[in-house]
Amino acid sequence: MRLDRDGPVATVTLCRPDVLNAQTPAMWETLREFSRQLSGDVRVVVVRGEGRAFSAGLDLSVAGGADPDPGGGSFADLARMSPEACADRIAEFQAGFTWLHRPDLISVAAVQGHAIGAGFQLALACDLRVLADDAKLSMAEVTLGLVPDLAGTKRLVDLVGYARALEICVTGRRIDAVEADRLGLANVVVPRADLDAAVRDLTAAILAGNRDAVVEIKALLAGAGGRSPVDQQRAEREAQTRRLRDLTGATD
Image 1: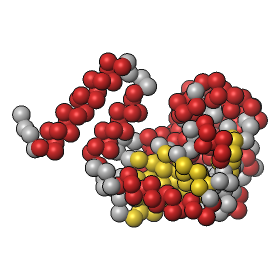
Image 2: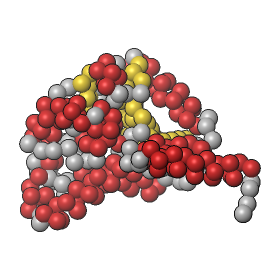
Image 3: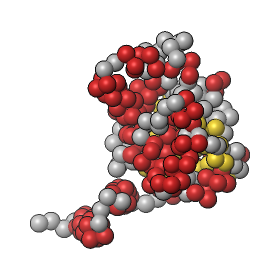
Image 4: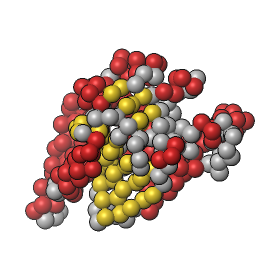
């Protein structure tokens, strides 16, 4: 994996194109570490994969223990742990994804080709998704007798609703870019050749907004699902009061 920085934009790139950017526990550790390396002036994080796929999901050779991984995440390793230790280990894996929810960042997934299992969940971890027209999404964990456990289930329900999320997860079927757009999984779908330009345009539009206003807006919308209408209106009032005082330099 690679972390690049260009002013207020950080780019996380999965760099295993020979295996369609299949993921390992060690990569999730690296993802978590990237979150600690970002300077305070980074506003946008772009997540992408090298080659013809975003990510084909979990590297099954590692998960099966055929290729020892310092991440200690093979099925056998996890099964030998106590239930509490196993859950704690999975929480560490999840942290490689959930930092993309941070309120001070807008995260954008640039998705081409396959985004399967852990790849789909990595795209879901981002606030926004730009899909190439060759994108194929699938929550394929059920085909391995597993459940999605990298913080993707709530995001999926939030985006498409319970019934559709259930159907997607229990069937493990492929979703093409057209359907992803229709279901609300994509913010925009573009020809594969235009993916980079579309991500640059979206990033520029985000950066054009006042940073503090963008942070407040993200917090308002991210928390809206858990608030009553009255509580959401109160949150809007409080956020706007902070913005007005900041913009005018008002003090107590």
